[in-house]
Amino acid sequence: MHEYSVTKSLVDLCNQEAEKNKIKRVRLIKIKLGKFTGFSSESINFYFDYLKGNTRCKNAKLEFFEIPIKIRCKDCGYEDTIEEPIFICPKCSKMDIEVITGREFYVESIEGE
Amino acid sequence: MKISVLKPVLVSNQERAKENRIFFDKTNSLVLNIIGSPGSGKTSVIEQIVKRLKSKYKILVIEGDIKGSIDSKKLSKLKIDTIQINTVTECHLDAFMTAQALPQIKKPYNLILVENVGNLVCPAEFEIGEDYKIAILSTPEGDDKPLKYPLVFHLAKVVIINKVDLSPYLDFNIKKARKNIVSKNPKSVIFEVSAKTGKGFDKLINFLEKELVNKR
View (cartoon, each protein chain N blue to C red):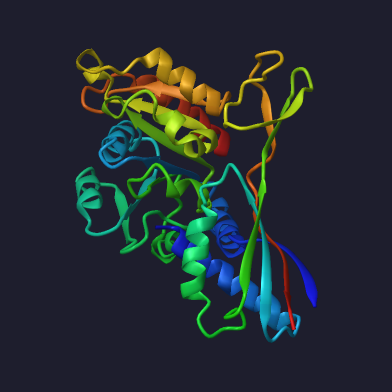
């Protein structure tokens, strides 16, 4: 599945950043993952253990922070966090909805020595 | 030592997609990323679009499949240019795979139709340098699929409901399907067609021609 190639991108990105910042051993990688993305932290973890290989990330652990789906209604200005991706304003029932958060998938930081 | 990274995991795909976009912009090509389940009718819909537009516009079809060239061979019979990309193990096209087609693009095409690998899940997250995504939902799949696969229906600017000719034989409720699509993307432009009978394509072609004129 696609988490394989995505996790490969993750390993490459972390190794590049570690090399750039002279980190020889990465211990912790903090990842922000939006609730409305096509990715699963379980699958990424699974592939990470396999793909980190003998790189600077070989002893690294992944820590995921889930970002909820937050919407804003452009009609009435109502903002809220929603559980399900249904883009109808719960207050005014209009449908001019902006997705403010929930689509993120980025490496926030790496820690190591 | 802790360092702040703040980079998208898919940064390299996004950067490659931007480079693909620069390439396509040189010729003002309208690039459409067509996504749908296996058997939803992606190739058939593309055939209908090509038949109706090829006399007025230069069209290229980029075919993404795991293996083989069945679809690109089918489309070549319409006497248009096609490029086949075999993803081998990947269930979606990404910007790098799409970039493989670029050296083979020797003409300025008005319209580039990219038929993604049959899949309603993975292609959604991978930009390839397109203008926008088109999702194809066929009536035998069921009117609840936009609820089950929200991301692709949220990201697609256009949704084509295909195989409407089969509606009398199925439990597919068009009103419900539209409501479900709109709940994921209120701005979705929805077309109801049958690639088999040709029904509904006048409206779709009208829409695409306006898009092509805007590109010029």
